[in-house]
Structures are given as C-alpha cells and as structure tokens.
Length: 62
Image (cartoon, rainbow, N blue to C red; front, side):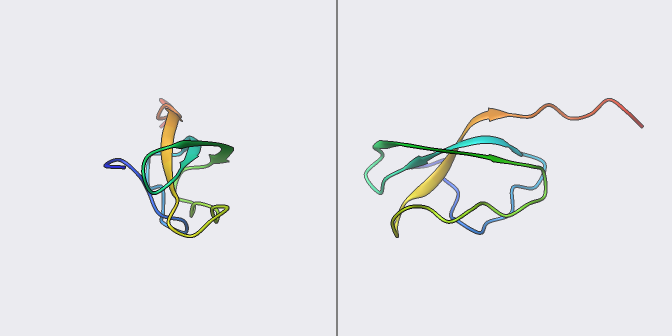
C-alpha cells in the first residue's frame, strides 16, 4: 500500500479511523480509531499496514 502506515508509527496531525490492509493490499475487517500524535496499534499479522479511512478535522479553536 502506498499510503500505508506501519504499527507504532506516529499519526502526527492525521489522526482518525484506520483500516488494516494486508501486504498485497487486501482490506481486513479490523479498524482502529487513533487520536492525533499517537502511535498506531499493532496489526493482527506481521507485514500488515494501517490505511486512513477518515481523518479527523483540525480544530478551529485557538
């Protein structure tokens, strides 16, 4: 996956809902909600990656 993020990688400002994908791009039935600047959780198998499904919007509060 070109846009995949590895487990333990920091989300930065791109927190939101992530779906697990296999090494050849197949979608798995595993989703995770991760806040901004937090590490991604482990995947069910080695070699799988997380891909963003929905990114949370940036806050307009100052």
